[in-house]
Amino acid sequence: MNRVKDTLRRRIYAVVARIPRGRVATYGQIAWLAGLPNQARLVGYALSDLPDHSRLPWHRVINAKGGISLRSDDGPASIVQKIRLEQEGVAFDDQERVSLRQFRWMPRSARSKH
DNA sequence: CCACTGACGAGTG
DNA sequence: GCACTCGCCAGTG
Image (cartoon, rainbow, N blue to C red; front, side):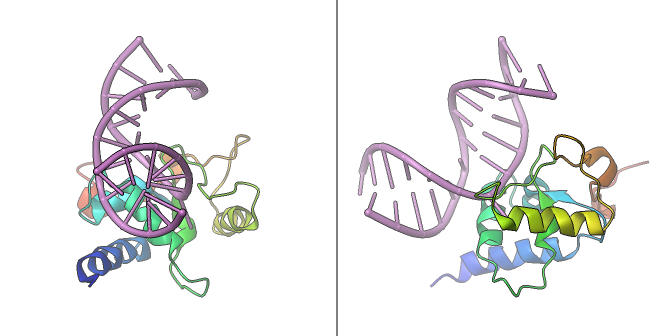
C-alpha cells in the first residue's frame, strides 16, 4: 500500500498546479507549501514520475539557484522547459538562470508584508 | 544491511 | 557568488 506516499504526491501536485503563468517556484518552496519542509528531493521525485501528457505546469518549478534541473542538461526536456517559460515571459540571463527576485511566485499565505 | 544515485537545499568559509 | 559538506528520502542492486 502506498496510500501515504500517494497522498503526499497529490499534495505536491496540488501546489504546483497553483503556480501562475509567468512565475516560477523552487523545489524547496513547493515542498514547504505542501507541508514537507526540507524535502525538496521528494518534489523532484514526484515530478519525475509525471506522465508526458500531464497538464501540470511542471516547467514552472526550478532549483534554488534559478536554474533548470533535469537529468541531462543537454537533453530535449530541459530545452522544452526553457522554451515554455520564455513563452510565458520568464527571462533567462546569460548564465541560463532566472531571476527569482523578479519571477518567484509568492502566494498570499506566504506574504507577510509588502 | 550497505553503497550509490537522483528534476534539491541550507550552512559555512 | 562559488565550492564543499551534510541532511533528506525513495529506489535499485
